[in-house]
Image (cartoon, rainbow, N blue to C red):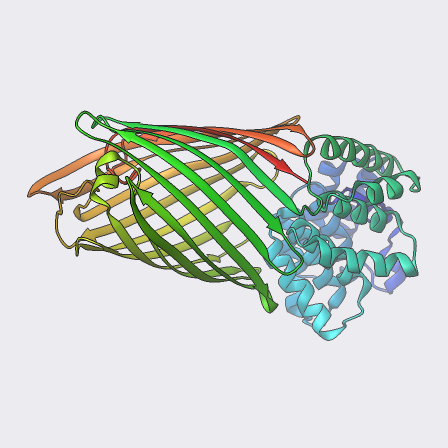
Length: 508
């Protein structure tokens, strides 16, 4: 995120406080000059140490100019001492809130640290005052790209190329095109871009490697059609329940809507029962302005010859810092033979949301009210907190979830219906790419307590999942996943279980 800024930082060695007509304290002057020499020798760690000593020595003397302090702070950030750099730049902004140059550099360093939310707040403050501030706009484009808002980033990058043909802008635009799957445009930019400095040659080499890898392994360009066939899964628990599912689906991605269809066949059995079920479902999703989306669908289920209508609808909204969701659905459970034979239908009302407390810390909340066809009902509350420890490849999150669930009564109809269920769950969630293979894993453990049929339960639980996605060619990928554990809410039946599944997806 920051290598392209080296040439600007290196201008420190040419900076002299005498230009501003202020004589530095001798101690401050000595530390600063030692920092300049170290920076000229590319000894960034040493330069950072000297600059920080110069800044600390000048706290009571105030002989360092804002321009010199700002440049020292950037050199300190280049040595990855982000907190020290941010502290210096924040002090400049605090002493002069209208100092857009310092505020812009603060945004830059915040983005280097990975605090995209904080960086965007600083950039937006500058742009509110000066909508055409070029430095702020360039950082805004980078922030949009790193946040996955590539179309918006392209507009800013392209506007700069019309005015000035800069290396950094061309590289940023090329990476954005790759994320959009527009490899020919990225290749064209790569071919027509030349580097002058060593860091530029390094960035060009990294760009070439990414183009080759992404073009071979990941189809990110806009697709119209997606076919999932076959999709197979096998489920088994410690209460002798088994279920095998075969499914196939089709999705069409239009300019103003998305259409999906799914057919699923289930064969289920246990020691005492056997059953089968068929399901076909159609779904339409329509986006609106300001990141609102409406989705609704209808379908049919056949439960051993009994035909049932199913339906769902939802309204969702996504913004940079939060998301909201409200949904309503009605369907019939097909997880076990007993559920199919009992024809257990459930209507679910859902409210959910997430909020980015910081760029790395995300909170979530979910509420479900479920009403069953046998006149049982449940209220289900889930709160979560997730910390994004590693953002790139590999990515790694630490998380905590607390869940409270309460059913009106025990129905004896085959689904897990505890009273006063409470669980505390800790988990890791990570993703790693190796060539054309993506591996996603999520182990978890925790404690659960509940009452069922007047019997109290108090247990530790553990489990997890792993998913492997293999890109076979740019238009075909395969997925294989395994999950299992003894978490009581891991499956509808509420027993120790494992689930194995796989599918092929064709995109064009």
